[in-house]
Length: 113
Length: 113
Image (cartoon, rainbow over all chains, first blue to last red; front, side, top):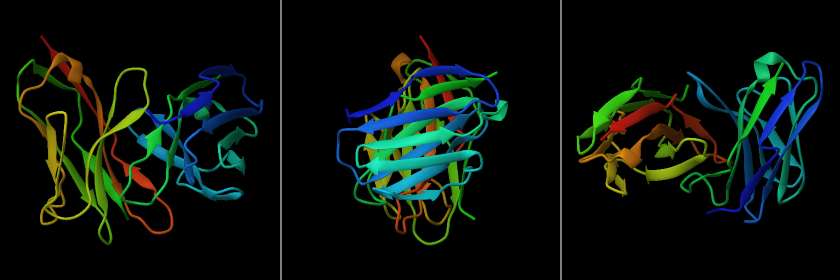
């Protein structure tokens, strides 16, 4: 199994509070991604990174920011959490481009009350 | 734009039945196609992939053929097991400078003994 961990695995927070989710990899892969999974939507890309300090937006980036200061860590921040951000968040990594698979972390279940 | 359409679930089968999960896509250029599987409480795992027209991906008894003429990538298995119960996601990669995946909404498979 690819070495990807996510922390925390579960979190309950209140509306308006900041939240940071962490993805850590031990594979030295170049690309890292954050997705959210919601019923009826499959997985949707929030942000991705193609190298240290190189990040870009995905299809549902509003309300989220990311940072990547080291190859192994990719942080997702909700500056002011809202109930619509209640979801399961997955981190993924890949290395060589479009013909190669993405490896997924175990997910973080976030509930915003 | 680029998109993936999967049949809605759940698909409910008895053990040893034949499985088909339909997937069609819309894409510019020449995408790679993937099937991912998500077991309960886990992240996604790559099940199989195909990178060009007429390629057949196969793994663990599952197979899918990249049909450019019908823009389809249907997942099949000749004899399902209870342990195949999971959610299956069809996805495509459009390449470019990043390795972004576009997912279908997922199809839940339930196999009963």
